Length: 418
Image 1 (cartoon, rainbow, N blue to C red):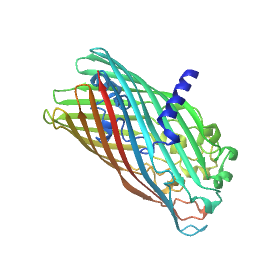
Image 2 (spheres, rainbow, N blue to C red):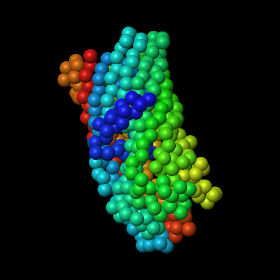
Image 3 (cartoon, helix red, strand yellow):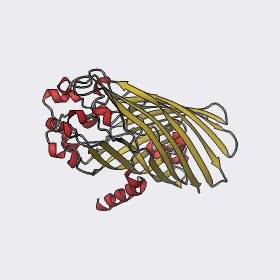
Image 4 (cartoon, rainbow, N blue to C red):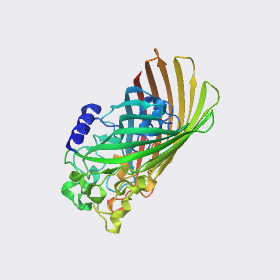
């Protein structure tokens, strides 16, 4: 296990330069994996395009063939909050963009052992969140210094896929996970914590864990392909340094999620594809428990302590791919998701405003020759604001907290086909 930990630590250090994290878009998970998929609004369950299919549906490795992929995404989120009608101070707006830019890398390789068996691996940022407020939104309640929260999550996933019958493939990926977290500026919540010494300002803490993803890919007709995959809860070590913040003494597992997909060839050149994904945020206590747990006798950090109050999130993604020429493939996509943050939970989510619901994406791949190709993608997470309703407890002066998020991302990947 020690060698695995060394590998994961080294990979994260290389992957996230300077400690920057993915501030991902469907809640805190990425809207898609792989630059090609990101150029198609994250669609991929029935449309494998490269080795990063492992992150969505490992059965796609057979279709990926023998190749290597290396990419990077420049991520630029715009996050903020405001407090209105609160008895402890005037109405204020807060800019959470003290850290502006994030680099999110990806890496994958696949190998065809034989016509019906493929093996490979992928390394990718599974999700993350960052807010950096020079003016602390919780200062009026007693917090000191600036407010800063940084959360990073890396997966390294070895995988295999087996075509057990013509056109029918199953796949399995082992998700080896590493995550780390840091928070400052939350001292106002110390009286509400079961472990105030491990609530905030304790530097970076990290943890390891593991889970699995299994998938199926089926060629139904010459034009129709279906896909499905399920990812188990990824069980993680607790954040001991933040045992007074997160429920279950620092617990922060990665939620179970699943995706169903279909791809239909309108013509030899044009394909329409869609995915339906559900992320079970509410099943993870530190994410799904509501702030109201405080008033049921459950302080921060306790077994049933408050989390961010997130609901399960389902997202519909649709994309169109067009083979413009032998060397150029064009992509466009749109996704619409449920809102994970209820209006009565916005107060604590000022530090985690994962509220984007819609994405629009454009992408393209340019094949220089039979072995080398370059892919690009742009995604806009449309700005969305959640207005609080009964969000700030009366004991803290009442009023409302409003939170907002918009995102831009630019991706570039190089692929080598063997």
